[in-house]
Length: 620
Image (cartoon, rainbow, N blue to C red):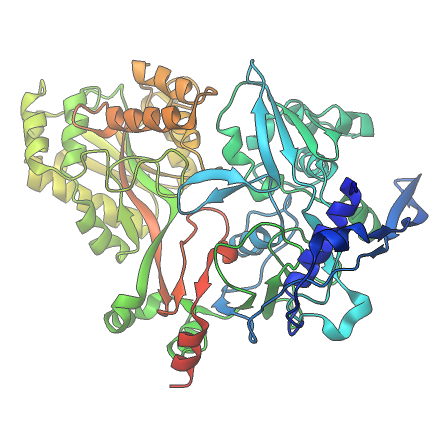
């Protein structure tokens, strides 16, 4: 007997629904026999007309589709759900993927909305999620994604309010997530009526830049964007140029699918917990109180295996010190370290503290037209004489990790943080200066070192100057530190700033998307970036472009390692000198195992909590 695709999909959904139902009896099933007995009835359809911008819009929604299947699933569930108890200081700003870059919001969105792809925190690679596979056209301009048909929009089951929040109950699937939902999300991101932060990174999508500048938007304008749904499970995205880094961008919240009919029905509040449809591994559970407590529960219809074992995430929104006190009493699994008592707390809980970096890297930049820093050996000498560990301890309270190359952890293509690059090497620094045309730092012309107006920036600059005096024998008075407002710092370091350009300056960079292209090409390429250094082009710049062509991932990784080595290794071009990446301490009890996210949100479905140890420790 043949079982059609619709019935098979229905059976999978029903089994997924039952899989996480608590207390359901354990019995055997005869799956094939049950499938043969399946009966699918026709959908109930509701149509309503609303007014939008003076026009009538007809909305047709499938209200329900009755599926009767003679199945008794095999289920064995823990008697008590595994819970993760954490804190996010302050409430989240918005859960609209196209309208926020706020950290707490991203933490939640990462877990409740499925993306085309997902960043694997353990391997630093991009893996499938909503998309099962993708192909790139021969010219590199069209990406075609094949999507799963078993990822659903899920909402709290208001008809079953008494069960709301129970693991495996209280939720119902609305409909599958489709290619149209992804297209709608991209259209919203490029639509000027939607205030999307950092939309410029999507200008690589055909028509996005033009759409974002229009004063009046028509449906035809939206349809002309380079994103089309071929059918429910096939998506085509057309780019303005070949770009392998686009795959990394597909893992971001900015490109998460959005259900158009919900926005049309509810309006701007569609992402509030009482209205929202979610599509990720977790959904909102009972006990959520906006601004105070957020409860996420495992989505019973999520088709992808969890790497961890967490059923429920309880998120408080407390100040850091209050969260720490709860953690110390074992009432939270994890907590930040309050900065005002960092030293004493770390001394008591050193073994439970992890220093987790973000993707904010600070660096020194050189003016290649400067009489001093046009000489590569001088740039090398100044770089290699910097003791980054000392800088981090004396100026930044140990809330950073030293960087020997540019791209930090959590960037696709970045070498490990302790590989590639020379870093602190006083002997090499002195040899480099000796081999330069100046032979001695004291013979260098006066150096204007420009920094921002903050006290911390001045403290850092003075310590770096002290290191150059100690290691290279420079005279302190020949390195002139000038503090200016940050806007003036940016203006004076533009390539065309003329006489206002300093010889040396401090700046920082933060990922817009988690890929080496955003670091090496967008910041350092001689023509594809601002090239604030006015660095002449080099064969390394060709490698940067080559690495962003559609080549196998292992070749791309090898190219980026080579580029970082040519910029910051023993024979370094040294266009800039990376100093450190910002970091914060996180306390966690021994019963929690996790891989932290350096970019985007934490992935709670990868967390493992030893519930037995946790219960014993809490009762101790």
